[in-house]
Image (cartoon, rainbow, N blue to C red; front, side, top):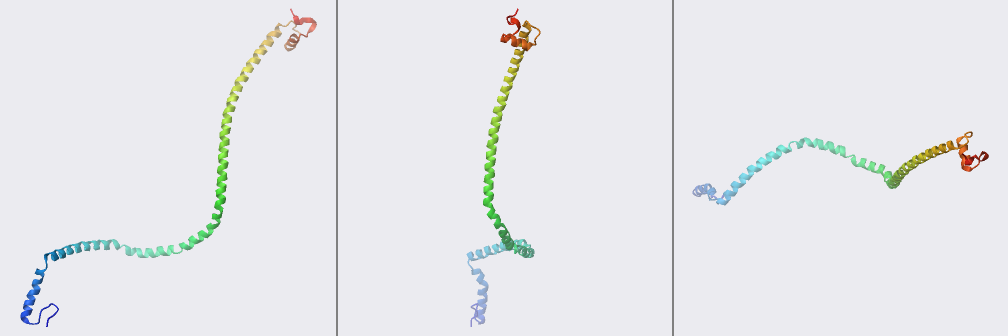
Length: 185
């Protein structure tokens, strides 16, 4: 009877089968041996990588309770978000009104800005005109002062000293006076 290794129970054959079994690894093709050696080298690298992954994942075991706590904290959030949404619904109705108010305020600000710019332009023109008017008034003051000097000089030359200077000037200039003194000396 033959066993699973293919060796028979007979002693002669068993001896030959044993030697044949021992020689079997020598009969393995070289390519297969190289593949086995390569796989063994890769297994060594994989072993080091597995050790590194284990070391890196050890702290994750401590995170499991923390994850449970986070879930407990996050669980009521949808309800809170729903409550906020319900409370914010009236605010959504106010948004169009707020937009209209914002546009109205912007329009008023733009109009006020334009008015201020126009006033500034008018102010500049007014300042120029006031400066010119000041110059003209100064000229008028000089002219009035000169006229006053002229009137005083003319009234001093009038023949009758009894009347005041303006009365003398009036009388002289209008030709009305006492006893024909307007034609004077």
